[in-house]
Image 1: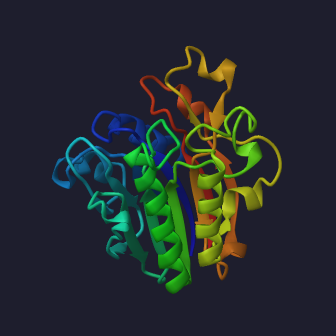
Image 2: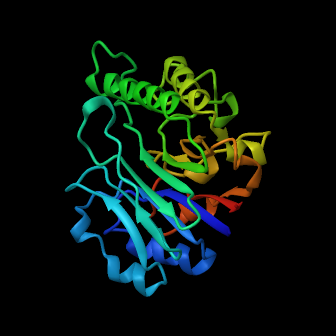
Length: 262
């Protein structure tokens, strides 16, 4: 089975449903994984996506916050959710394709503005969440699995516009990057995007605060595609659709693509 997958923090699926369908129309990915849907499942505009050919879906949602969804042209079944850091929030959903491949879609907590777990409960929750990811996948080593999502951490020096200037900024502090790499290593996950694009600056997020995000180009690679080691060799054609960040009323994230032949 050959399929192309996209992961995208959409920052409100109801507000930006038209952008999702435009991506579907232009690029035609077989599977679209969305984060930060900010909607109860019942209020996601399913009919719009079904009319675009995405007739299979699983999701978890809550009013105004978080939320994850997997939209697919291919048949899939709900494979449950994981609740890390005991947050009881809609931050993960899994789906299983007919060939047995499991897709995990994560939205890791952003962590607030202060990188100190003692004074910032949101940062503590983020670290606890990633620690629970590590523990879970160390105990349940993934096979025939793909993990995608907004992991809210840019792990490599070339995943940010300035490694030195962002060392004390949430999303690139050493405690976060080390925790994410430990979680990835615990499951044996392969960073598919960097497998395919090993060198150079690479971003998937640009702040709304920048008056000219494109010219300033102060980005970070917060959105990821990982694969379990048994299928990582079947992944390729990775790309980040930077131009989508420039669409009208966009998300501050750009979609990340990869193709699998498994």
